[in-house]
Picture 1 (cartoon, helix red, strand yellow):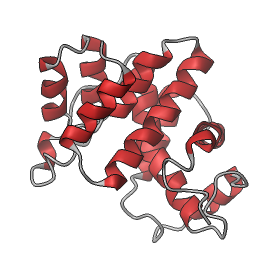
Picture 2 (picture 1 turned 180 degrees about the horizontal axis):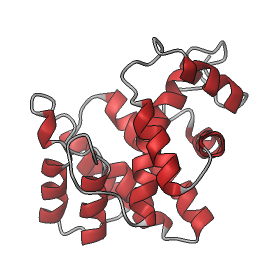
Picture 3 (picture 1 turned 90 degrees about the vertical axis):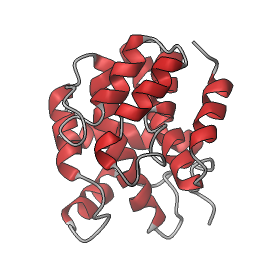
Length: 190
């Protein structure tokens, strides 16, 4: 498998928008965090998180092709089948019928939308930082359906459910996972 630097260069070859790169970095950080907690391969999980939306900008006009184009790109580049399948499974029920089965797939499905939601919550706070962000603050914004409308809360809740984890616990851990990289994802710059 390619190195993290090579994977980042590959991502940037297909994605030019900084918001998409920052999202990929956030998902990578969350995946590495959970891989460590679960005693799994942090590089494998991290690179999978980094590249999960490699086709995002290519499929904007044809959202039903999202994950499928990305899986093809990664397959052509020689990525292992577990990475390709994880990329497909993170779109389960949205643009893919590949259900998350492995632990890596379940975490990717659960944290993809959640990293975006947590980032959005941090951005509206005075310090624009994760350092003092609480689960309670995230849950308060969760209830406000007008806030971050594009984030599918049902997918996040379903992700926590398939992991067998309380949503509040998952939120807390994703906050912790993102804290070390907040500058790279555009937070904490107040």
